[in-house]
Length: 478
Image (tube, rainbow, N blue to C red; front, side):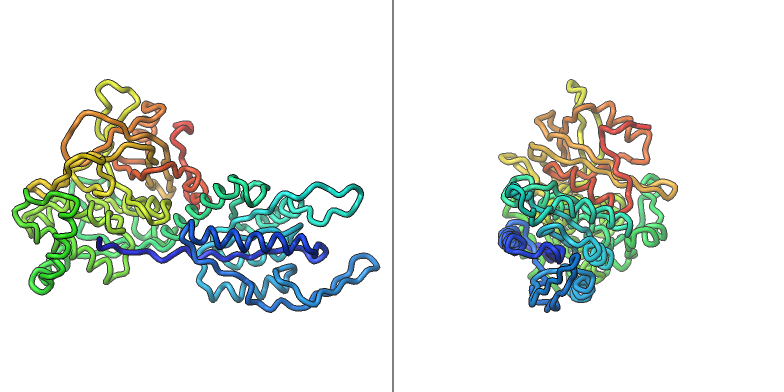
């Protein structure tokens, strides 16, 4: 399938220790971290950047009347090392930073590197072995992390912490995976560049955004495209790129019935137009009019097209909902850019289940999310018709009001429910009335973003880095 692939997350791994705690156990911990990072690079699809190539200088330090000299150090252990590490990493275009403590750690060096990099930071150190009687304890790893995390706060550095545990434990794998999701969300948000095609439907005041504020506050860029520029792009594709149109039609028909459409090639050409403009302006997501422009120019609604764009790695929101497009970008990032999200209306309560709500829209949901065993198809008007699969999912809404931005985040389960048109999922939650009041009192609207899986921990963590209020579904309404 034609798909836009995202670059891998670049994670810098910077082991550290304090000079007075240099010994075989410190090296053993670093080696264990190195091996685990090789395993996790494949598991989480990462590019690992190490400091192994840095030539750390000889160390001489004094402890009371004693003097210690190390001919060679293999990791960061003082402020001078931190300067070298920061200079090196700035050239590596990293997205996140992992600082494992291989012993007590050097809080000054940790703070220097973390402050200089300005990326999500993960702090962890292993549990120490049992004391050997009255002998000197060689590590005291947890103690050093207590000191370092206070200094990070003094420097204004936001960080994520995995509990003091052994590297083989599930707690480490779980915490590491959640941090990678956090880092992906932060990266997607900070590099967001949204293609804004045409203008919002005249009546939709609810989807208005403050473009200048999004840029000034978060660095989020909107790229407006006029109706004439879009239609000219599609018409050029229709005239000159017939082979690509046929290829896209054939690809869609592998999984979905297009026979009800009057002209399948028009649908494919319009989709290629969106892809062409997103590529031209280096946009990471799309928000577009869907009521007038495409239908008026080409006689078909772009609903299914939006779903197929989501399928191919370009988050796309209808009804010119730019905040939904931005939230969709974050949702896809939480899956390590492996799965599609969807934008839905909150529409009606289940006729019998008081804690179940219909998440629905005309037909713009990615076909990869279709319920297995159901016949999916595109109706004559251009909308996709199929229910979504069942399973656990995260429901989100990012919105702003009077300069303050909040992310609603809750967990539900897609379950069996009454059949309806378009794309839909009946979603059961713990307390729908509480959710309903949350949305009524705001600052949210009726559009939400859904993504399968429970990603609440990553979104809560990401909001700390982004300066957005995290609004848990279960938190008080006022």
